[in-house]
Amino acid sequence: MHGNIWRDRCTRCGASETRDVAEPVDDGPVYCRSCGAMARPDVVWFGEMLPGDALETAQNALERAAAVIVVGTSNRVYPAAALVDAAVDSSRPVIEINPDITPVSDAVDIRIASAASEALPAMLTSLDAISANG
Ligand SMILES: [Zn+2]
Image (cartoon, rainbow, N blue to C red; front, side, top):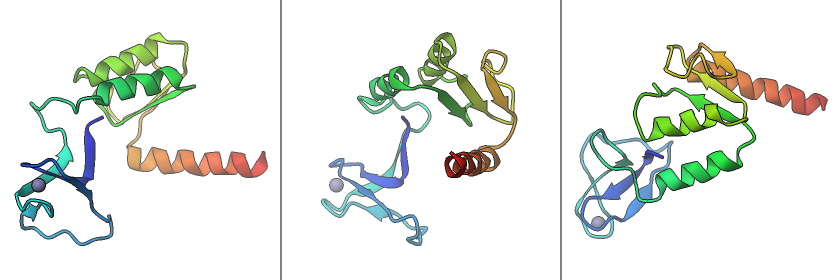
């Protein structure tokens, strides 16, 4: 919903380019390969609007989801927090991964009080084990 930190977007023409994660990052400015203007990370900063269809895309994904995993968000900033509220109000299982208590912590089905960097790899390992045995 909030963009991709590995993608640059031109401040003039809007062209975007995804960087290779393994590519070393220079501390200097990044310039558009199309028009030469300065590029910026293609993410939403505080005070900026979400990209045009980001909220609708997220709402559609939520409606199709069998379960919802909410990772590393305070659940306090709207409109994104409304998606979590809708998930909690639905019949879908909701899992929250966050070391901190959020406004929905008491309402989710499973709360994992852990950092995403610890919980997500552990979940993948568990899912791999289930797949291997199933
Ligand atoms: Zn450009």
